[in-house]
Length: 142
Image (cartoon, rainbow, N blue to C red; front, side):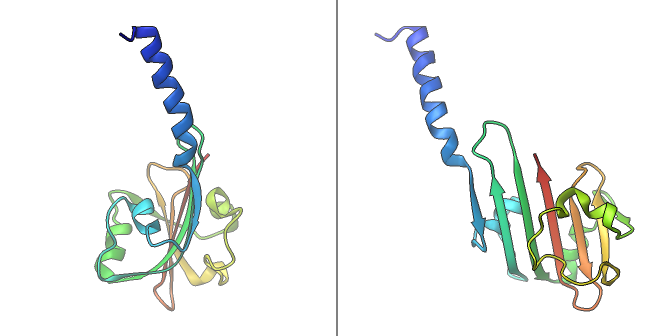
């Protein structure tokens, strides 16, 4: 019979061994859309490029960048007034998750984008290329 202290020790051992398996880095992985948004990719959305990193640390730490071509309906959902607010695109506004951004993420001069920032998360950003309509989304929690 296993007593409570042995059961606790067994649980802690398994937890410590399994946690590192939860982290990783995924570049242009098919599952990155779901990792970023938490639901399956709709048919009218095309992921152009993506990067997702999650720490294997016990706390929630992540960073992601994703560029997508989508319907106007999906874009409206990302920029709804309930969750984000329009913001001026300037270098200081981009510091939160743009410090280590991939070269493909919002590569044009900043005046070529519209930007929205989260009302909740300090680093969540949505950018829309004014010419091509491509959406760029990034966030990090470190």
